[in-house]
Image (cartoon, rainbow, N blue to C red):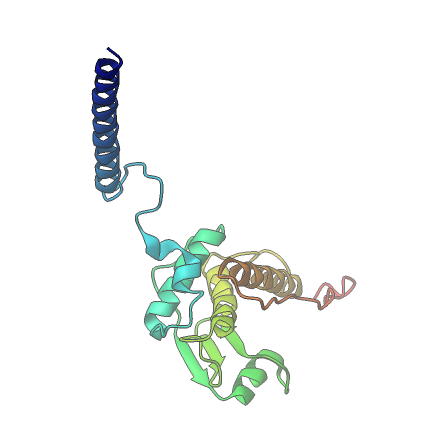
Amino acid sequence: MTSVRYRRLGAWLLTGLSVIGCAISSAVAAEETTSQIPGVYSNYPSDGGRDLSQTLGQTEHIPTDRLVSDLLAALDQITKYRIPETHPLIRKVPGSLVQQYACQKPCGALAVYRAGEGVYLDESMEPETNVFARSVLLHELVHYVQDMNKELVDVRECERWYRREQEAYALQKRFLEIVGSQIRVAYSQGQACDSDTGE
């Protein structure tokens, strides 16, 4: 009598496991199918290229044109700005020219954005393979996006420059955190505007 019970229990367990196995297989198949359909919920993003740490936190070579597109896509994710369809021109030039444009004298500048001209990047920088250099390029692209979105255009020039610079450093720091870099940046220059002059 007990052997009959055990056979029935065994048959019941096998049937139950078969049903569970079919349900799991169906759920996995459904997840694989729906994760590839745009607009359908899934447990993970179907576009792995949007993961900044995977696309921009690695040292594999990224061609400059694609890198600029990827960095602007990153800014689309981490800023409030509308990203323009047109990209600025990126020029690699001697560091002395970057410093002249940025500071009008020798200084530590590695890149500078000039409205209407694009980004001038110290030729020693290699954002195509170096994550910190990418963050420097991203910093200048922040200025480009600020310019295209007319950020703070009604604020006096000195204050506008100061506040835009603060934001660019904050976003550069955020980018470095997201991509897993150990390097950090900060903007420590005090308020450079003289409130009495109106400049």
